[in-house]
Length: 214
Image (cartoon, rainbow, N blue to C red; front, side):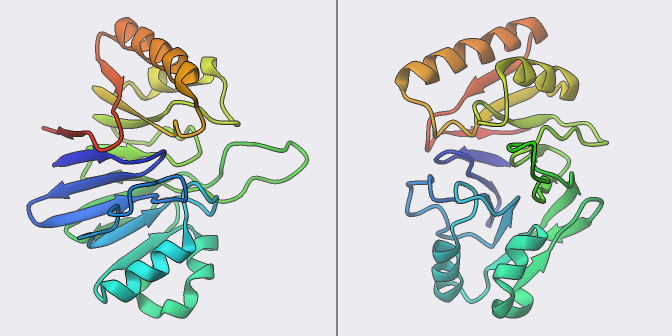
């Protein structure tokens, strides 16, 4: 399987002739992000993970494209019929030839006076876990973690704690689209420090960069 990091929180997973895209939001500048995709997974409704207009256009362009999404997102796309499927914690699905297990229910807290919105993370083929906007620890090993590098809902210390608890073999940074060059440098230093502590490969992929997974 090949993992390609796109802008902010978006990744493409490919194996053979099948392609799965996760969280192509408004901060994903690559207009080709959904080209050739067989299915799309959406973790939650925030604009940086869910671009409704882009998804609708992609559904028109590709009549076979399917979307799997948290409840709120699925509800907003309900007029598209059976091509949009609601996911929830505990689901085990076969999506475009990929085995997908769903973990997590809530977004990390932003406003303590408001309840969290739904957020679902996806473990694909028992290899890659994309948590969306949550620090969910799946009840299964995670060889490859899509690691949030920066977010309004996360402190640096929480990033260290999260990658330590999940203990992946590899971690590739996502959720970095809010950072300028200085912020990226600081974040990459912390991710590198976490990698040294664990003696593992944890790093940021540049947008468009791909890695081949075992």
